Amino acid sequence: MRPEIEEGREKIMRIADQMATRLTEAFAPTLLEVHDDSEKHRGHAGYQEGGESHWQIVISSPAFDGMNRLARHRAIHAALGQDIIGRIHALAIDIR
Image (cartoon, rainbow, N blue to C red; front, side, top):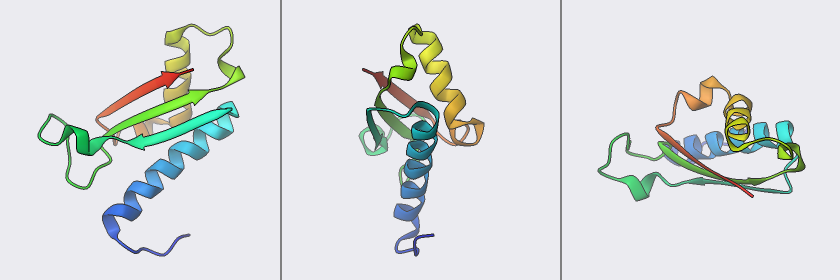
């Protein structure tokens, strides 16, 4: 476990790390980027001070071959789990 340096930053890192770990385990991606885009949404619905409200995932994996767009998005949501999905306001998914 990493030492807590700054509570807000540590919390962001843990969620980003959890997302990356779960997606890696589920899909063995060839490309994976997890971005906290919350600051871009300051003043909008769902924004919370300190981040963790709006996320973007860029992912590529052979595991998505043969899946339509809806099935891919459902698979990503399932891999992330309700505990993460329930804590965020928005998730943008870019599957390449």
